[in-house]
Image (cartoon, rainbow, N blue to C red; front, top):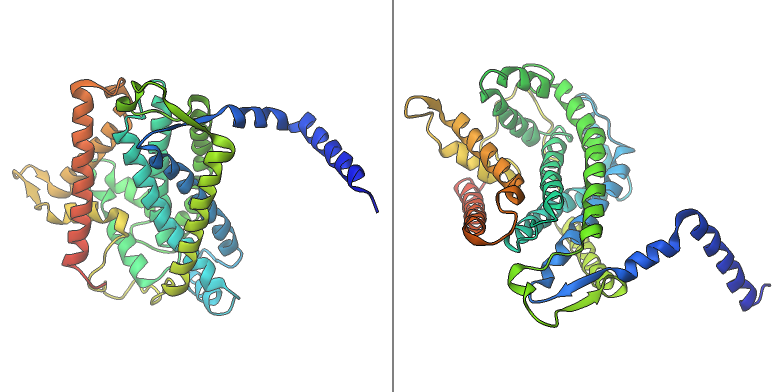
Length: 367
């Protein structure tokens, strides 16, 4: 049996072999060099890592679900039912996948708005903000495309309502709707397309933009808010191991919350979709689309007898999305009147989203 010195020598040889090929010493050097600013807003820095952790949970549980899922209108519902009823802990994996998706989007929203209010989009972090905003859009796309995959009644009719919004766009709306659905209505072709986008197209795009985002965060480091930049003797903490260990504590807490939610509030499958049945009362989208759904619901059929209400709402959300994406160009320094406008818009948007979401659920308490 090898003694302790011999074992250590072998471990050193393995480390040297890996270092020569993948650059472990360079990675350690970068980790030791990276520092995190310490101030009263430091707690917001943990949201990015939390969102990434929940995305990893999504990937792991999603791969496990793929082993049993069948992407066709004839087999999708039964494959999910079999997974939940017959596969050991299959119901738990599906519940964790669903709950982690909701928590991931929630933390992504918190991360986005914390970056906005702390002015972390300023030069030279413009591309960091833009890549992060694109990742937010991809996360919402994951939620929209994944919602239909169980092929249950609620998902079917909610998807029909959600995709109909695309058809309102002038000139290209009809074509875009048929491309999205794979036909004139939500059918098995729609399910197949959503499945392909959910498990292939979106993961590929997310991998690219996530890699770019993490590289830019590593290159430029954590931004210090403008009101903290002038403080003399600014404190910092090493990323490794201090900040990383705090991140790990948060991830373990998130894992415990996920396990509790999945165990005590498992995701139900509901009834199988029937395209010929009438839509059930109280159809609502997922909570992160509720404010948009409720806005379109309150708009009149026509505004000033010229433009359709739904089209006006879509145009308004599109303009707002473009404005949010291009904030670093509009407000490159994070100071002055432009910065105050960005803050007011951000606060107004947060309040509007919360109010409309609450109204949507209170006005229609039942599915």
